Picture 1 (spheres, rainbow over the protein chains, first blue to last red):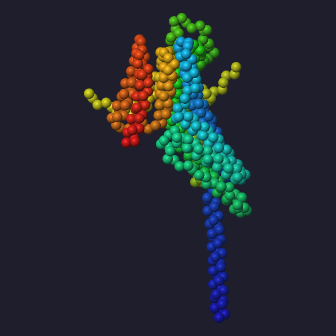
Picture 2: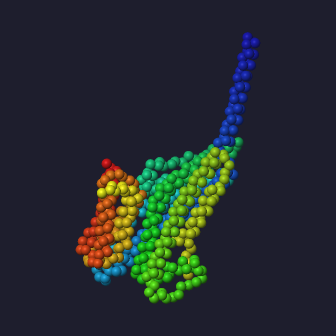
Picture 3: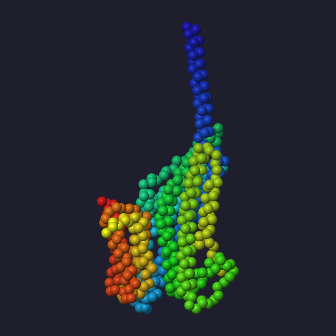
Length: 354
Length: 120
């Protein structure tokens, strides 16, 4: 019996030891796994900083697109009203002016304006989320991170829904949902750092998802916008033509920007050479049309650059999440491109001081 | 008669765009040719409809392979040429306003023909 007891005790001790060894091994494995399933704070901070920069310039691009499209109703109201100038005074002329001052806005154009407004909101929210991501990587601002991701996800879904209304082919994309919740307060001590790195990974995946969704919705908006750009240059020339027809502007004024480019500091003589009014007018129209086309081309290029920026940002997230080394050259180049293109747009240039 | 090449979606959008741009470019002379408040309203309404038709169709799928679409496309081009000829005439024909609105109606019929083919 005594030998049997000893054997049983030994067996129990061995079993207990094995359990403890397994627990320790599991604990080590857990530590290894949790260490792998996160991103470093420095990398997260670096990506977040680039995200802030990219979304700032994308926000500017959105405002510029909004200004371009938003100008159309005013152009129509002005052009359609000035179109009454050939009518003799009387009831028909009065009716013409009355009927021209508030042109109807086509539904598709109103939809595009709404989509651009939603994109402005979405980019502001994403910009705030990237700033909070930097803060979260710096000093564990988990609650702010959760709140700003919620805002970014909500506003990107609203933009996506607005984009679907202007491009039926886009309607199938489902809304995205948030994965990140603030859990940093749940675990303390030994696990805190690992938890933080896993939380940074989750937040990155959410921002990545928002960025991809934004890119897809923007592609739809760009498609509609770029088709309209060709027409916008026609509309711009029409407004100019209306000014000339009514006699509101001097054709030489229209050619002044060109003169200042080819011969800086030189001014036109005050009088129009006799018999040359028709060729000067035709030259002025050619100048307006050429500048309108250049402006339209630059606007289209800002969309291309915006899409490439979001693609570069998406790729940076993928690398961060795969623990690969980060490089932001492509992203920085696209951001720089948008800035340069925006500075060339007439609507973005500072107004001359009086 | 040799077979005509089928129109492309871009050709069809160009027909709608051309209808609008012609109405827009000619708005001052069209308005000057009106003789009553009703005619003024008709010119302005036509421009608004031509504008809406083009802008509301820019992103639409204008694909479709059917003779009815080709006929509607051809009719829209003919209608546009008719009002263009009216404007170029020394004196506008009495029915010029009908031709003006007829061009936009024909452009609208093109969109309807495409939609009909799509819906089967």
